[in-house]
Image 1 (cartoon, helix red, strand yellow):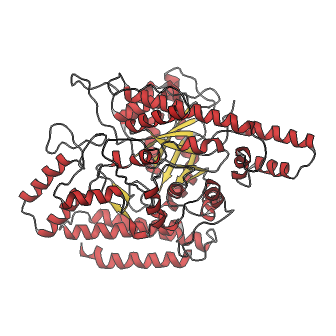
Image 2 (image 1 turned 180 degrees about the vertical axis):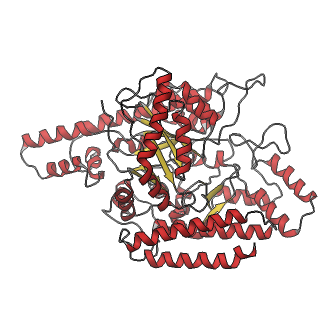
Image 3 (image 1 turned 90 degrees about the horizontal axis):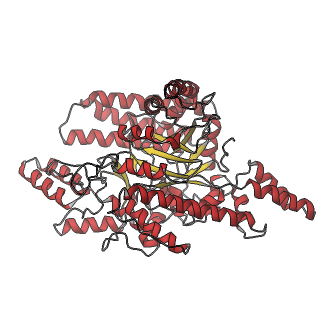
Length: 601
């Protein structure tokens, strides 16, 4: 049996920990795919308790003392979500085709080019009772749930130990989360790996038969890898293919024009990256299938007769129907990830009221590419949240750092034998004392001190929105919320319904009121130029001169991207009337920075 094609041409990517923790329960019945983070198992346990009570079923806690509790919590929560969604689908299928019903909403949300949207429109124009009943039955049979996907940030893979202190085999955070997903009853679902290759996680996939294909190339559970360039996709795809594991999707995300953790490329931009995937997709597919075939042949497993499909999807800063249509038509992109704008859709995501109002009011300068993440990776961060204010108050009171209750990001052993989180009180006390002893120049001391103090607890801060929305307690006495939207939030300024947001995506309405929103390619280019400027200034501040080769390559890549975009504009592929002039302005800005800075090296 061939696997079902998605009703929609967009998906909701993972956001934070809480923000999409129950998005499938909100949107899957309308055919919309969304992604749950399965990093924070205490959050998942809290949501298990909430939703078992919501559907009036008995909630049986899975305590942290239970064997393999992390994986078991994740498995049970995903099964619970799946049960709720299937119940919703059955109810929706049985609903009457009348104004305000969910079955009508299902078809109203579909894109205009969807075959069943056209049949639905025919139904609305039909008066004959028998013909109407026949069409309604056809439509009911076509209703499918959106994919319930999950995300594992592979860097969040802390080791775990048993009560005697022995390392738990296959018990690290990410591996246990993977096992939890693999053991769930989700079908035609995808696990998304983000933040780069983790051999321990990827090797564990060999122990998971749930990811094997049948003879027709269909999968019960599929694998997607979030990447920021073609090279990363090729390397990770080959690594897994050699183990007999097929990657069904590469989710290309802008290195800097995204929410959450930002992994800047060496100046490679979205357009040229997508062009590479477009021209090399056949080569990529054939190369991976050759390795995949050999591996499975040696293991005497079922092998499809031809390469299973590989989807190329993209996300990061996309904000208009015109951008969406261009990406899909020119680069053959199969689904567009719409993340940040959905933070303003309570029907789709879980954001507390105070943070919703901050998001609505957010301007360009309110979203910063911070160093707040304890992972040491740049992190888009919204200023003014309750967690931001709490951190500032602690610093003013001479008590910097956060209590570390979850320990998912406890990796640092600079001062302690047991790994600690760099946002923790313990680490920051040690680090500040060290900085004070080094007798650094004042400007360097202040710079390095700020980097220490910026670090912030994400495990709790990115989970607390769900506790606030559902009036629950996540970690007792700690209620502050932080959030990590992409820069694109500056152009979305009001809370909207699911219908309105989907209508915006498909060009049936426009909710962007900002008159000067740049094209997604231009916005990303400026983010990379700003990043270059910051890195150059930081090198001057710290008297560092060992990155000349890096900066030269970075600038060359930006210049090649600009030339590529000029070619697109000159050949009429991008219809945005301001695109070329905005591009030339960005080019001038880059030249000024290069003339002023690079020549100092």
